[in-house]
Image (cartoon, rainbow, N blue to C red; front, side, top):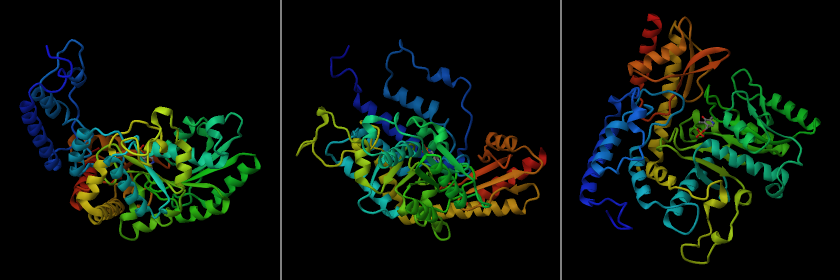
Length: 471
Ligand SMILES: *Cc1c(COP(=O)(O)O)cnc(C)c1O
């Protein structure tokens, strides 16, 4: 019915505007009432309700937006609720929601070219670089998350070990390499090595010392052992906040070790990196992180920027660029105009087309400010410690690892951890997740939630005790 160029945009902009305003109100309502909206299961017929049918004509904005608000928005992971402690799910930041709307409106492609959005990503990277204490010559790029950031970091580590020709020649003629990480380190490290062609056995898991951090003597022995067998150490990964137990490797001591052994030092700080902002003693866990060759972290976990956004920082910005830069003729830079600019992010990572992830992070930091972000992170550490002390005082649970920062792992003495977690999720009282530590199934709270109060922690634990007694 409509002409080319007019088929797709809204036919009636005023109706679109009204529906959009109404939708914005419903989003803000949801944000404001997060405390009353715990996780709820999705409807049984949701798959059918959202299925896309070829024969269906396009719907008007009011219809589509009401489907978004009523049919989809309520059925998320529940991590916007203050008693959500499961996995490590960020809570989301209201300013980030508004920024997502602006980012989508601009629809900028941050693969390269010279435009304002690039400056915003640069500002986010620079701010984080300063929190890390990396030198000004360091570089960075926003990624989907820490998994992708880890892949980028390990590719750069390989370039340093093997030389720049590895990009052209591949690894077929190169011998075996090794990456060291603590037992229980995140699977994204092994996955990166699978993708890179080395296989997951290229990761050597180093034993934990009594407190659960990487045992440095075991690390030194593993490196010696590999070298004697002709396997080249490529990187050591320091875990800042293990995903199961929340424990931190000795970040500064690992920097000493890597410097002495001339091995690339990568820090997986997906959530734990942000302890840099916390008060003592928690910020001490991150002392020395500025000595890393690379750092991977997420903005979607403890900073709470809406999903998804991670970051890879590298101390050697030139090596970082050489690891990924490729410019076919159609992307050659210009002196001036849109084709200009010296920083093209496509030279620093996997993606050529890149969205404006930076804006929701920028808006979050701008709206909340460093000091309040830091206080909120400190609150979470105190709340995990509070939970740890409630567990210790309880006759029904054992603390299975010390609480170092924001994660508390504990096992029921006489009840089933999985059943307890499920019961609380279904009752809407709280979300804990489970894991296995020392062959016991444990409940696990990872508090990265800026809405959580001490009373939420007490209430959630009381609900657990009640359930455990009833089981
Ligand atoms: C979440 C997490 C990852 C993976 O990060 P994504 O952003 O989910 O890709 C890696 N390491 C640790 C310690 C994590 O908690």
